[in-house]
Image 1 (cartoon, rainbow, N blue to C red):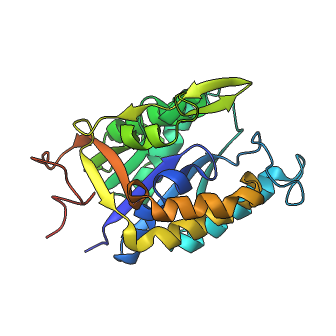
Image 2: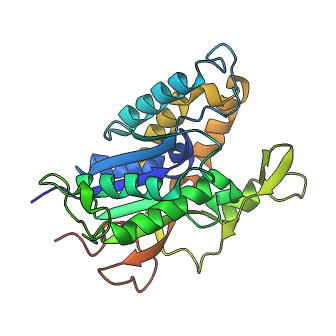
Length: 271
C-alpha cells in the first residue's frame, strides 16, 4: 500500500511556516509523504534584512529559503507553480487550476490543505490559491477534465479530505495591538485578520513536539524577518499555548464528518 499522503498548497514562501509548519513536520515524522506546492517565489515581498537579498535576486533567495524549510520539516522539496508574486488574481485561472490538477493526479494525496476563503487576511494571492485548490479538488477525479494530462503516471484521483487552514479568534485577539484588530499592512492599508470561533473549527492538531522544528522552518525564511526581534517573537511562540496547535476547517470529505473536534487530518483514512 502507498503511504498516507498530504499536499499543502499556498501562495508564497513562508505562508506554510506560520500556518502549518508543525503539522507538516508531524506527519512527515509519522512516515507520511508530505508535499508543499507554492504558487510564487515571494518576489514582491519586503526584505527584512538587506544583507540577505536584493530585489534582483529575491526570487532565488526565497526559493532557497523554502527549500531549507522543507528540509527542516522533513518533507519533499517544494513544487512551484512559477507565477509572479502579487499577480495571482489576474493570471489565467484555468491554467493555474490545471497545474494543480496535474500535481494532485501525480502525487495522489488523500488530504489536501490550503487557505480558507478569506485567505487569513484578504490577500488576493491567498484567495486565488484557495479558489484554485478547491476547484482542483473537485476536478482531479474527473477524467473528462484536462484529459490531455492522463498517462500511466498521471491518472484521475479522488482526494478524500480538503482542509482550510484558519486562525482561531483567540489567537487573532492575542495578536491585536493598542485595541486594534490584528492586521497585515498592504499598500499602506491594514487588512484585518479573520478569526474563526471554536464552534467553526473542526480540527486541531497538537504540534507541541514539533514546535522547535516549526521554528527551524521559520528561521529558514531569514530574508522575511528583522533579526533583532526574531528571538523575542520566537520565545513568545514557544511559551504561548495557542501556538502549540494548528487549526483547520474540514471543507470536503468522502469519509464522513467528525462528531466533535478531530485531532488527526487522516481520521477515517487509517486502518
